[in-house]
Image (cartoon, rainbow, N blue to C red):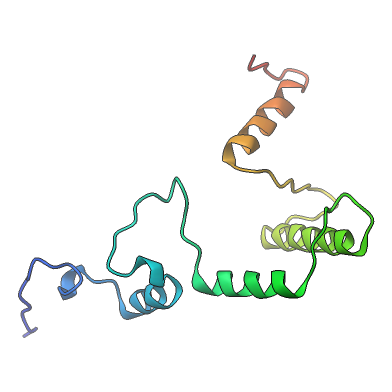
Length: 129
């Protein structure tokens, strides 16, 4: 017979309200800023994992990234990094760069606007204005 656990009213202490150990460990390791809090504003901004902050910080401290639309060495580093990420994303989706383009936009609204504008310009498309 399984052991009974008492519901204490504290989800973090009740086994039936807990995530598995791996999720708890990942949350504690990667999101220490969320300790003792409930964060529900992911639509506004999602907290960055600690490992991403550390890698990005190190990258920014050891490299100079310039405007990717210029010809300086720092700009070329930015351009190469953008193209590398573009190709990694296309590979992730098994999409050939010969057949597909990947466009980076500022946010979801900008992406939807770009798609709507492109369809509006197509024969038989629609004009959202």
